[in-house]
Length: 119
Image (cartoon, rainbow, N blue to C red):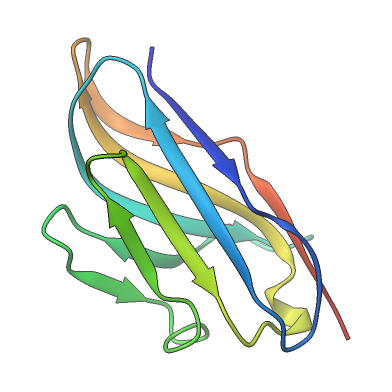
């Protein structure tokens, strides 16, 4: 059974920083792309940042230069460093990973972690 477990969310004032982590565990053979999504109340889930297995990164325009994404393949973990947080960054943040396991090859989601930015 493959699991993604996120941590690092919380309440922060505008301009502050948070670092999200997402660790994959289980019968994993390979992790391809890893990504962060977010969903604000009343809005659709949107892509925030993606990192491929080779380290190539992609960002939403709204977070570019503020939210660097990184990964530690040995730890099977992806990180999202969130700097210069704004109230509009408030959302539940979800980790997503494309994983080849002993049973299947598909995308997995974490349970989500709340990020709240006060003005």
